[in-house]
Length: 74
Image (cartoon, rainbow, N blue to C red; front, side):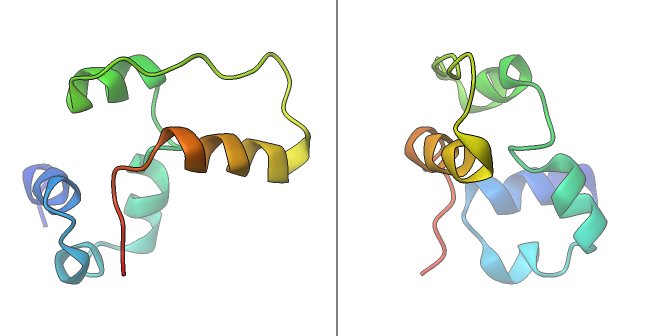
Protein backbone atom coordinates (compact mmCIF):
# COMPACT_ATOMS: atom_id res chain seq x y z
CA UNK A 1 0.00 0.00 0.00
CA UNK A 2 1.36 3.42 -0.93
CA UNK A 3 1.09 6.64 1.04
CA UNK A 4 -1.38 7.87 -1.58
CA UNK A 5 -3.53 4.74 -1.13
CA UNK A 6 -3.54 5.34 2.61
CA UNK A 7 -4.66 8.97 2.22
CA UNK A 8 -7.34 7.95 -0.26
CA UNK A 9 -8.63 5.28 2.09
CA UNK A 10 -8.89 7.85 4.88
CA UNK A 11 -10.60 10.43 2.67
CA UNK A 12 -13.08 7.85 1.37
CA UNK A 13 -13.68 6.22 4.76
CA UNK A 14 -12.67 2.97 3.07
CA UNK A 15 -12.50 0.59 6.00
CA UNK A 16 -11.53 -2.44 3.94
CA UNK A 17 -8.49 -0.68 2.48
CA UNK A 18 -7.51 0.76 5.87
CA UNK A 19 -7.56 -2.71 7.37
CA UNK A 20 -4.86 -3.71 4.89
CA UNK A 21 -2.45 -1.16 6.37
CA UNK A 22 0.03 -2.56 8.89
CA UNK A 23 -1.01 -1.46 12.39
CA UNK A 24 2.19 0.51 12.95
CA UNK A 25 1.39 2.65 9.90
CA UNK A 26 -2.11 3.43 11.13
CA UNK A 27 -0.79 4.33 14.55
CA UNK A 28 2.05 6.49 13.25
CA UNK A 29 0.10 8.31 10.58
CA UNK A 30 -3.34 8.68 12.08
CA UNK A 31 -4.69 12.01 13.31
CA UNK A 32 -3.03 11.47 16.70
CA UNK A 33 0.39 10.92 15.17
CA UNK A 34 0.83 14.07 13.11
CA UNK A 35 0.98 17.81 13.65
CA UNK A 36 -2.26 19.77 13.82
CA UNK A 37 -0.98 22.21 11.19
CA UNK A 38 -0.27 19.39 8.72
CA UNK A 39 -3.64 17.78 9.38
CA UNK A 40 -5.47 21.11 8.99
CA UNK A 41 -3.75 21.57 5.64
CA UNK A 42 -4.68 18.04 4.49
CA UNK A 43 -8.30 18.47 5.58
CA UNK A 44 -8.46 22.06 4.31
CA UNK A 45 -10.00 23.27 7.55
CA UNK A 46 -9.14 25.25 10.66
CA UNK A 47 -8.65 23.05 13.71
CA UNK A 48 -9.27 24.48 17.17
CA UNK A 49 -6.46 24.75 19.68
CA UNK A 50 -6.45 22.02 22.32
CA UNK A 51 -6.94 23.05 25.94
CA UNK A 52 -3.83 24.03 27.85
CA UNK A 53 -4.21 20.90 29.98
CA UNK A 54 -6.30 17.77 29.44
CA UNK A 55 -8.18 16.00 32.21
CA UNK A 56 -6.15 12.81 31.80
CA UNK A 57 -6.34 10.42 28.86
CA UNK A 58 -10.13 10.35 28.96
CA UNK A 59 -10.20 14.16 28.71
CA UNK A 60 -7.84 14.05 25.74
CA UNK A 61 -9.96 11.42 24.01
CA UNK A 62 -13.16 13.38 24.68
CA UNK A 63 -11.66 16.52 23.11
CA UNK A 64 -10.24 14.52 20.21
CA UNK A 65 -13.61 12.87 19.48
CA UNK A 66 -15.42 16.22 19.48
CA UNK A 67 -12.87 17.88 17.17
CA UNK A 68 -11.92 15.09 14.76
CA UNK A 69 -15.05 13.55 13.33
CA UNK A 70 -13.44 12.76 9.98
CA UNK A 71 -13.54 8.96 9.71
CA UNK A 72 -16.57 7.07 10.93
CA UNK A 73 -16.78 3.32 10.84
CA UNK A 74 -20.29 1.98 11.27
